[in-house]
Length: 337
Image (cartoon, rainbow, N blue to C red; front, side):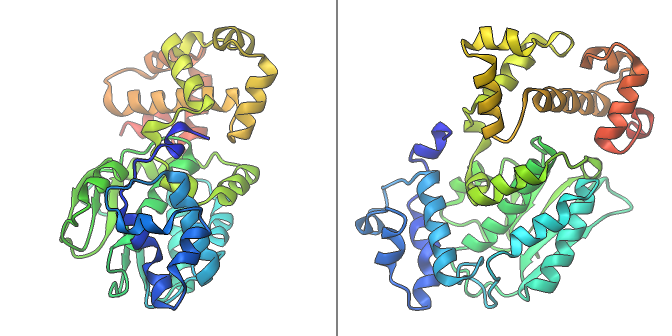
């Protein structure tokens, strides 16, 4: 378990906010909290922080109890399994843009109280993913709205195996008292009092390919909402250690599995097993690093394709061009236009 999942750093506000909808439906707060191994007296202790693991267990318990993925915080419930159905339906898509468009179709049909859509602009390179409650009267703490935005952002990053730099996250209400939590959850520019909720991202990121497998999705859904609540900046998983080590050695000279084992004082077999448990592999991490660095160079540096190819660790420019098109759906020359 990543260290940040077991360290208490989440505001106590989220205890009451998570169970409020279930309480309105007549469910016992004692039962809800005890089912997540959270002492009931913590509700009356605003200074008591909670861990990601505790909040994950509490939300799971509320989902099971209410049979509603919206936790009783919407005027219209959302059946348990709706997100999993959407994720399974979208996984075979070629790009992130296709996933976002398909997800809007699923939730527009399945959930009556969600205003969702992908708005593309002819005049701006930013697109807007609108994700707003049409009636937020039951979401008095804004928890459901926060969770929906966080869920789509984290799921998008997970699908393409990289942190997407969302430009702006917008909220249709004034900044709440727990706004400091927003700054930790959403590492973007925050705008409150907007007409609708949603987030902006550069149109180029819609072209990123989906890299996850069905097996990885099964793990993601089984652990949900753990990944959504987890703050990646605090990630001390083996995957993160390996990524940092590989990046520090340079992409043109990344160590082999045997070399990595010596550096980490582990056996190659244990590294492979641990990475598999975390839903990845050494090859996938190397590919992810090359992909992220290539996109960064092509987007921000005035370099030739041959220069980028060499910096990313390819011996032949043609091989790099084929890989780049596989990663982004566009050739390097098309990407830079």
